Length: 158
Ligand SMILES: [Cu+2]
Image (cartoon, rainbow, N blue to C red):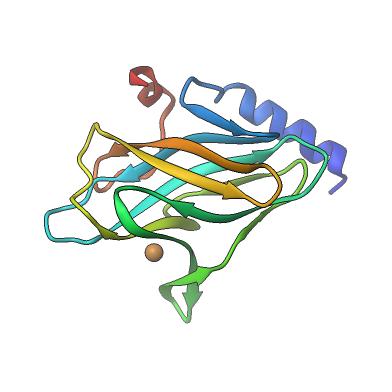
């Protein structure tokens, strides 16, 4: 696909989704960071968001930290002979003019060793570090345990 066509298609797609709950790190736009609420005694949580590179240089998400957990890892889902496995990845490349969606079916940030359960309706601070754009603090909106992603109406509260 020609890059110009791809960019035009993405611009159309995103025009309708632009809402208040988004953050910027340089030319990287981070849309609707959210996490699933966790039951008591479960010590890992999953978080999702969308990255869009609106700049002229490729960037890379290299690390993340949160006061809510000891560690934040990047995981991608891998279909291994019909069984979905999580695999840790070291960084996430965000090429120019692309949008990368972390969602339950593709990849997530894994909050490892949660200090307390993630509660519905709360906001969890998260610092993302990009190789070029540097660090940026975002807030994860905590949604239901079985939530699958943002609906446009869900943006009204934040
Ligand atoms: Cu995981």
